[in-house]
Every structure is written in structure tokens, then in C-alpha cells.
Image (cartoon, rainbow, N blue to C red; front, side, top):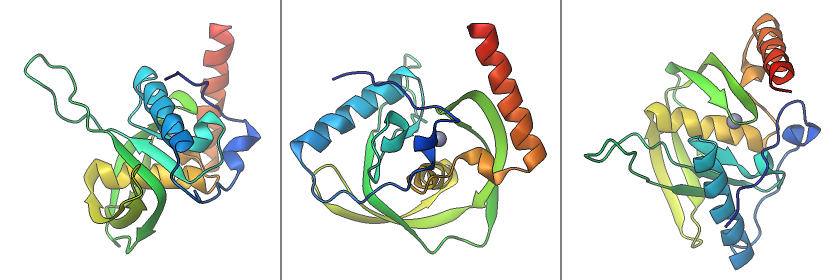
Amino acid sequence: MAILPIVEVPDPRLRLISEPVAEVTDELRDLIADMFDTMYDAPGIGLAAIQVGVPKRLIVMDLQENQDEDGKPIREPRVFINPEILDPAEEQSVYTEGCLSIPEQFADVERPARCRVRWLDENGAAHDELFEGLLATCIQHEMDHLQGIVFIDHLSRLKRDMILKKLNKARRAAA
Ligand SMILES: [Zn+2]
């Protein structure tokens, strides 16, 4: 178990197209555990393997939408190996997205409101489900990472440049 360093823009690794996972091994399960540690620590709700520098088609996610009676988020970890998006809805929805690779920056992104997702879990079992709401948005955001795309690529050049400028300013202030 370990918290891994998160790859941030403009690191060129975020532009790589990730390779399919050939086999679900113990080594892969160790990486999954480390990715969850890293995601919860950040904190974030989703993380693609390339965000910790591993170009494999692997995503961990936990929306933590529900809380227990003490107000603590209930963990519902999900693992997606070699995920595929099928039948994206024509209807779009807008969410204010953020990304651990573009820290503290947020912007509205429009994506299909629903999609079907097919994937393998950490035991190698196949799943096929219809996603909607934040789950649909989050899986599409993370799938983009597997294709070398980050959420600000969906924005106008003006908005994208504004975010990168704000990010650089925040980095200089923190240095
Ligand atoms: Zn992201």
C-alpha cells in the first residue's frame, strides 16, 4: 500500500494512449490498491492508471455520494479494467469537472448523459451496465485519460488557456 505521485499537466505522459491489460495479476491488484490509496488521499473520486504514470487501461473510482450517520463518506470502490463505452446517449448533461492532474481547477463540461459500460473487475469478471448521472460523467472523464485526453481539451481555447494560467499562478504561489 502506497500513495503514488500524481502526474500533472503538462506532463507528456498524460497524452499517451494506454494499452489494454492482458491479464489480471497480483501485481495489477497491488497497483489497484495503491491507486485507491492515492485517490482517497488526494482526495478524488476517480483515477486512471496513467495519472500515476502507468499506461494501462485501468481506472479506479469511488463517487462517495452517500454518508454514514457520522457524516463520513461511505466507500464504494469500483475497478474498471479494459473498459469500453457503448451507446452514448444523444442527450447531454453538464457537470463541473475537476481532475487530480489539473489540481484545484474546475470547469463545466458537456458529455452524453448516459452510456453503457463494459469492463472487467479486479477478479477478471465481466460487467455490462448502464451508467447515468455523475457515474456516467466520471467514467467518460476517466476513459478520456486512457485516450490521452484531459477534461480541459473539451473547453474552448480561451477557457483552457485561462485554466492553465490560473494553475501556473497557483503553482508559483505554492513554490
Ligand atoms: Zn482526470
